[in-house]
Length: 327
Ligand SMILES: NC(=O)c1ccc[n+]([C@@H]2O[C@H](COP(=O)([O-])OP(=O)(O)OC[C@H]3O[C@@H](n4cnc5c(N)ncnc54)[C@H](O)[C@@H]3O)[C@@H](O)[C@H]2O)c1
Image (cartoon, rainbow, N blue to C red; front, side, top):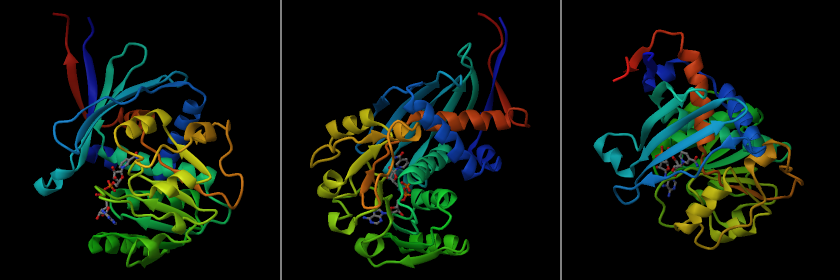
């Protein structure tokens, strides 16, 4: 029996590859296109829950046509911050699809951060109204900032950005980072000031006791994103949107069955993959209010991890032995 080795990539190894956001967006668009055409095996994520509000999820995916497959094993523990540990952490495994052998094990944190933002950017590419130039961001943490980077890739004219966060340091960091890039960032005193009347609204917050975005602030033509699986948007804003789009309807229903969407499940207009694959239109009018709650699919992680592996595989990285011979 042959010896089997696999590549090990730490978070720093992955970061130091300097893969640009534009590449991540291209990869995930390709992934969503395959998903829209029904050529990706992406079962609902099972999980274990050792503490309230916490999870460790298993997220496998296999691309039939591209021959790419793997798994993300990711934990989310909000109480970790007090322990100086990241809230989101975990590993990805990339497998060889002819034999199932592991090719690489790598950190999943950066991949999780960039893929989520790239999915928002692809949604904006297909669903933002023409001439979009303003954005309201509520929650200026990792996702608030990453989404902004990704939006700029697909909407270079985006220049009028208002933000709100309960943490002033998070707002300062956001403002400093993006003003350096020529984006005018206005710090608002509350959610209303940040989001009302904007072309796009993004909520990227944590652990909310009640929703933040009111229906009346979500104006005609707006494209709204909630990264918290419904919790940041009032029920009428969700239910009265002209279109409701998500990357995964199965996961949306699963979340509903476990307490999300307390005012009722919206009617699905389309999965994002169907829009990207051209099977459903994105935006049909400049007046439509489109609400998007992307949940996060394994296929989004796996296509990026496969690319990371391919970029790194001939480099000077640690190789680990899985087995040397039969026993
Ligand atoms: N859908 C997906 O695929 C996906 C993937 C990753 C993260 N997420 C979600 O995105 C959200 C943001 O994640 P993150 O990694 O950026 O977290 P983060 O902790 O880095 O940032 C969250 C920010 O929200 C702010 N905040 C909290 N409550 C607020 C409130 N009431 N009003 C305004 N600001 C508030 C915090 O101060 C913080 O700056 C989380 O809910 C996370 O679960 C979704």
